[in-house]
Image 1 (cartoon, rainbow, N blue to C red):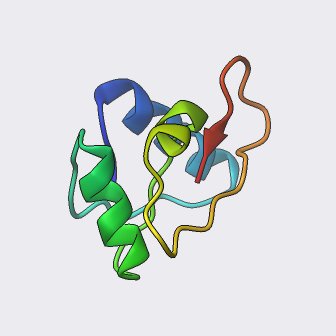
Image 2: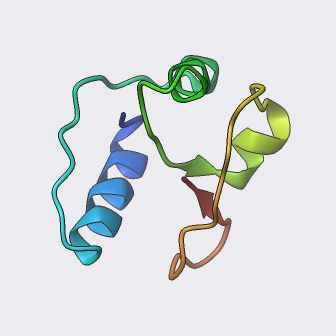
Length: 75
């Protein structure tokens, strides 16, 4: 799942560095929608740490994406 243009680009770059191209079936700028789909087990996404501190749905597991300067991105 990809969000805004900047996060989508960062997400695609991180996936490319990991050696794969994700199949993006849905996009949303809404962190609550993104987290609900992840918590339901039907999606993955990347978002800034601030978004997780603002709202974190039950069942969300997050890891810091290495190599990103500034605000940590979580996936």
